[in-house]
Length: 474
Image 1 (cartoon, rainbow, N blue to C red):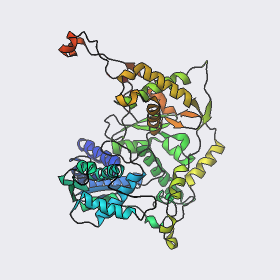
Image 2 (image 1 turned 90 degrees about the horizontal axis):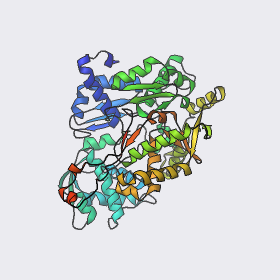
Image 3 (image 1 turned 30 degrees about the horizontal axis):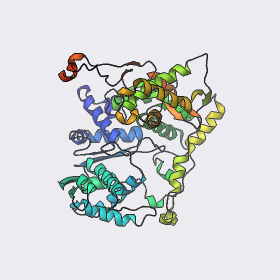
Image 4 (image 1 turned 90 degrees about the vertical axis):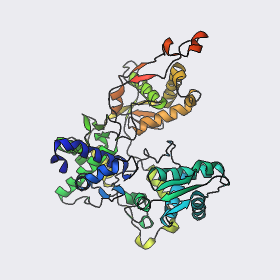
C-alpha cells in the first residue's frame, strides 16, 4: 500500500486526492473544482494501485478526466442524481439524461439546446411510456435539469444563450453548448454490456472476487475488499448486517486502519459497527449535523426518539433488523424491456452468496433486537416541534408538517440512523451518537435591528434554531 511509504509531509495531499475520487467517481477540469484533477493526476499511479488493492476499483486518468469504476455490492437508493439546485432526479430525468448522452456521443463539437432536445425527443419515441414534448413546460424543465447535470460535470459548456430562457419559451430562447467528448465518454462506461444482462444483479459482482468455496486466501481477500468498500460507501457499517467472515474482518485493527490511512478519516468503532467520521464535510454527500430546517429538525427528532427509547417506565417494542430487501432489484428487473435483451448472451444473476451467508449466520447466532417507534408518534412529534420552533423553519416547511416529516425520516434513513418499517421506525444504534444535542433559539439584539423597526417598537425576531451536537458526522 503506497500510503505507508509516502512522505508524511505529502500524505495529506495524497489523502485529499483519495477522498476526492472516492466521493465523486468522475473528476474533470472543472468538477468538482479546478484543483481536483491536477491533484489526482499528481498521485495517479499510487491511487490506481491502492484503490485496486484495497477495494477492487479501477481508476482511469487522462489529461481531461479521472474516472473511478467502483464495484457495487448492493443497490443503494440513498444516493440519487441531483440537479445543481438539489432537486432529486425522477425516472423522466434519468431517461432524458441517458438519451442525451446517446445523442452527444454522435454529435460534433457544438450543439444547440433545441437540436439536442429534438434528438432526445426522437429517441424517446422508441421507449414505451416516454416522450419529450417541447410544448410541455414539465418536459422542458426535466430536460434542462438533465442538461444542467451534464454541464456541471463539464460534458457541456455553455458558449452562448441561456438554457432557462429556452425552458421558459423555446420559441424565443436558445442555448449553444461546446461538447467535451472525453467527458461524455467517461460518464457512461458500464462494466458489462447492458443488453446481455437479464437482471440488474449482474452489475453487482466483482470479477476479482472468488466464488464461494474457492481458495481460502483469495476468499478472505475478497471479503476484506467488500468490508473496505462498505466503510467508504455506507454512513455506518453494522456488524449484524455482515456474514461471519466479513464481521470478523470488520473487527480487525489492520483493515480499518488501512482505510483510515488512505482517506485521512477517523474511524469510530463501537460494538455494533464502524463509521468513518468526516469532520471536513468534503467526503460525505450529506453533512450531518448541519444547517437548514431538515437537518435541524432531524436532530431535534433524534433527541425525542432517544428520550422515548430510554424511558424505562414506558418501554417501546423491539424487533430484529429485517433481512435486506429485494424490492429495488425486483422493480428494476421488471422494467427491463425483454425485447432488447440479446438472448444468446444473456448473463443470468448468480445466487447472492452474501445473503445466504447472512441467513446461515442468523440461524447460528443470537439476533440483536432494536427499538421501534410508531409512525403516528413520529408525525405527532414533528407536529409538536413545528408548533414550538416553526417560526424559525424555512417558509416551505412551516405550513407542511406532513411533508417535513417525510423528508426528515428520509434523511435519517439515508444516514442509516433508522430503518423504515410498515409499523414504524426501527432505531439503529448510531442514532445514539447524537442524543445529547442541546437546542438554543437565539434572538437578535436590539442593536442589530433596523433603526426604523426600533422606532416602531418592533420586538426582536427569532433566528433559526441552532442545534449543537458532537463534531463530525457519518
